[in-house]
Length: 124
Image (tube, rainbow, N blue to C red; front, side, top):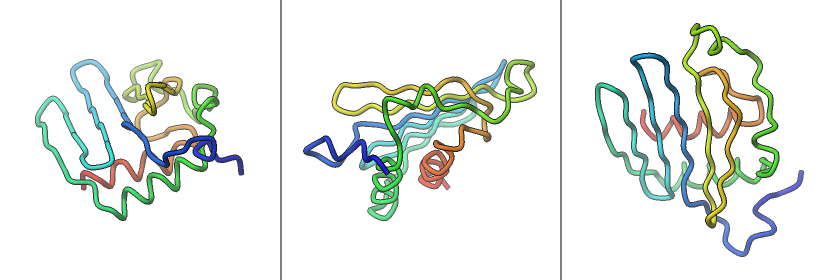
């Protein structure tokens, strides 16, 4: 497996962002090494990111080809007919932004599923 982090001297990330929205409803999750900010139309809350989750996120990022993130294909397209929230994933690292294509909330491209689930574990 090609490691995107192997080219970098520092094994870290600035932030991971997951956004999902539809008419009248939104979810925003921003995870940094230390904190996770979770927002919906009803609430906003911050959580501490544990060392275990930090390590898991870094391990999962090593499995992703950053430059390919926008090319990953979603298994479904229900957001285009309002049957699902439209969602996207964004990785910010060293001033570079790697953004996914739009996908259905809860059904991301296979390559992003584990990392999005790990992000969500920060706020459970």
